[in-house]
Length: 442
Image (cartoon, rainbow, N blue to C red; front, side):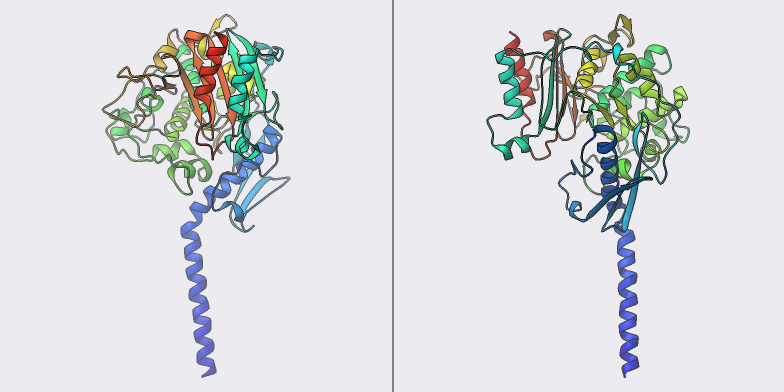
């Protein structure tokens, strides 16, 4: 009888182990999106921003079980120190990449700040009304917990080409690079314009991937910019969704997006998709024959954005949807470049009228975001309605995860940048900030 019980117990343990192993492999892709985020975040914060290794982790049930560390090989994250491990390594000029080893991207194009007219401007002493506008955006009237929840970390205001106000939270300075998240999509629109001006690509180009032999071959560069490709996508930031699987569990992000099936006829539906932007940069990479250095050589260096780091995936394709770091002043310079319709230091880099074209909404029959144009959010829709009455009709902006904003207001010759970490804030006060700044400038 004892032998029978021993066999029963052993059998039960084997079944439990097998069941546990099967369960782990089932949920492993979900866990890897969490460990991938943590590894990349730790690497980038430390090597680009000079901040603590475990800062800025999102509110997620997996966070308490993550173990994060570093050694000569890079930055690692896992669950309980053993499960679903991921590694991120830093490369000079290109930030951090999730890969099993350190990638080889070649030399990074040098970037000189002298090309950026905002870089050397003195920090101004703003007028009282501007100080009040910034105080509201930083939540000066709130208690410490409220200010932390609001999460404002840096603001720069540029009027007629001059910095008229700037302010930074404790622990941040004018030299601290901050991640723009999806503001990179708007910068990708600018990068695309540079290549259009060069004749390297056109908005009407189709047959963008050799493996697309079905209706996906009809997708154009403009469809990707306007996010109307029709490819299946889920932009929800959660464990195991399409967006997090792309960013944190795919070596070749563009190919992953290209493999998605069509769920709408091409051009018939607008759906916000980070995948569209990364697929576009895969196309730009193929057309130019360049890899991770493409945005640095064609955009960041000509603008003199010396702090800017645009990270790439393991294949060397820039992660154009999400991974551009820059100081608030360099983000403001991007806005100033857009305000000038692509003329920088007397040289035209964008096709004339590019900003008017890419900030004009063209709503397809079905639109998730009626005020999304070609990489930029606009304050007016195709039907003519104004999105926010506090802002001028011609205002447009770049918008990023956790509260990143870059506003351009042509009628006021104004650029306003707000960077922060605001996952818990109901209102990051940016529209009111811009309205208050306009009022202060008279």
